[in-house]
Amino acid sequence: EPMLGFASKGSLLPIELAQGLPVMSLNVSEVDVDFFRIHDQRVAAFVSEYDSSSFSVWSNQQLQSSAKLVYSGRFALPVQENAQQRSLLPLKNIEQLQQPGIYYAVMRQAGNLSYSQPATLFSLSDIGLSVRKSAASLDIFTQSIASGRKLSGVQIQLLDRKGRQVQPQQAVTDADGYLRLHLPASKKEDEQPVLLLAQHRQQTSFLSLRRSALDLSEFANLDGSPAQEKQLFVFAARD
Image (cartoon, rainbow, N blue to C red; front, side):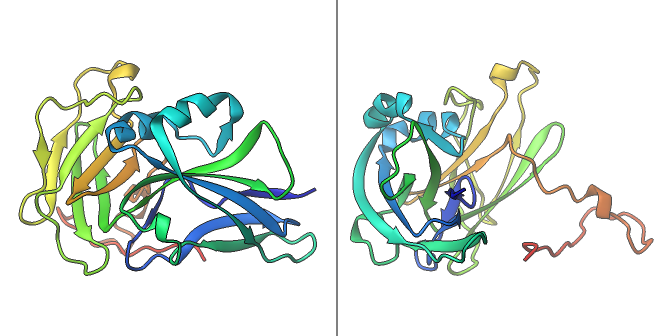
């Protein structure tokens, strides 16, 4: 049975370094992909709502009002019979996909129509984000993906699931690319932040706050050394 999907939800593609959008497939040789660029004024509401790995045709009207189709194309995928393949959809040389912003990609097996299709959000941005979450606050760190330099003056927004800003005042990172934001005291689900949006010089990155985070607590003091205020961890993808 053929299988098709994007390898991740909410990919960040560095403008200067990105090679393509990762895809997982099984017994699929060609795909058709539509790329939509989300309107700048609709980014907050759209990104906070679309956290799914699939797109239903019933949502088409909302997509059309929130985004513009900028490119459609067919891509060949590697095929090894009955073996799952991971590949990259090459985007670097597609002129319509070089403008910084938030994009929404909808994919289908060539010649196959269905009510639900694999989909993913991704951003073209140089803003790298890492966040440490505690019970009462978020420690936010921003840096340039291309150079590794700290990014100051990055505007940070915390949004609820309806796209509304949670924190009352505008917040920006300091000269060290750092910002601490306090979480709402209310425990009501509708008032909890689900998305962090970072904007700087017409570039936008986002980070979902409702997905599972990397939990480092179980690795503390593995060598028996006393706990310290600052500890260094090095981690990477499993493969």
